[in-house]
Length: 373
Image 1 (cartoon, rainbow, N blue to C red):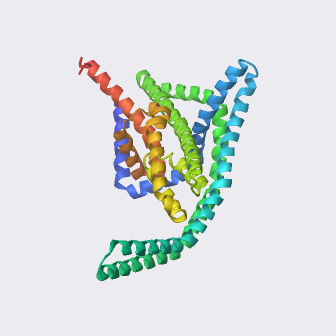
Image 2 (image 1 turned 120 degrees about the vertical axis):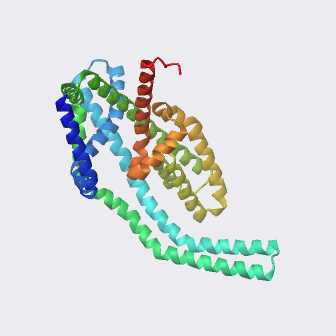
Image 3 (image 1 turned 90 degrees about the vertical axis):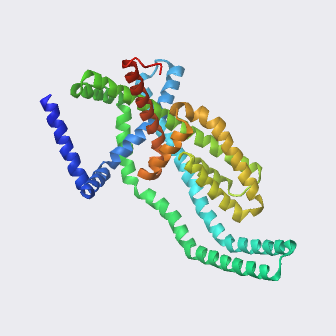
């Protein structure tokens, strides 16, 4: 007991010191995060790849039973990495150059689109039968607005193009961390059972039996929820992008591949990603095919209803088990703390905390003989 109190006192002193010197603490945490980033990335890669690898291993077991057992793990691991790498390479080869070219084309079309809208506005003014003073005021304000928009676009389009390219080059710049992370992930996946067994032994060695069992149950719950969320979110994003691409082709809309790829990618970010992809899609269609903007908006609303009412509840919803209110709260808090990555991981993390907290409440009510309350 004395040892536990001493440890708690030391922990309190360290916490107070860290809060008092928060700038130094944040700097140290940033340095440590930079050093550990390849291994954190490796753990994340291993977790994502493991979802696909487990599915392939189950398929192997159904097809081949107990044949070629020694080859099952290496073959399934290789196939998993090959499939994921192939999909990523396909997206980069097709989508990134298309996105870059699309922005170039749109940059050239902005003045033309404003001119067309100016002509349309003059036609409408003639129909509305406004007074001369009203017409003069509208023309003056519209001219000032179009001049400002064109000047803003001309001054920023080069920067926008360079940012698009810099996003690609910055991704390439992280290749060292990715390579180290992939190697680390391969080691984890090849020997994951032994690592899990050793981790279990460490937990039981340094914790009481009750605490050890609680930690292991919490870890198993987190694995189940995160795996279901990752697998479901990826499948949902793929199906949503596919439906968007097919629908835009049928409706004869421009930039179907680029917009569909953005819709699929941003679908990985709950709630916020949908709004961002809708705005970007509207901008693309507004400049290239202004007559189809309303049609695109209607199509996108229908697409989102299909996603919200059919895809998400069946593909992702069961693994998360959160209401819309909690999802929104988790995304808002996660985005505020850790940006886009926080938005993605906040939903399954909130789900884990929600289940653990609910279980704790049930246990306490049972102890107090209030479980029917």
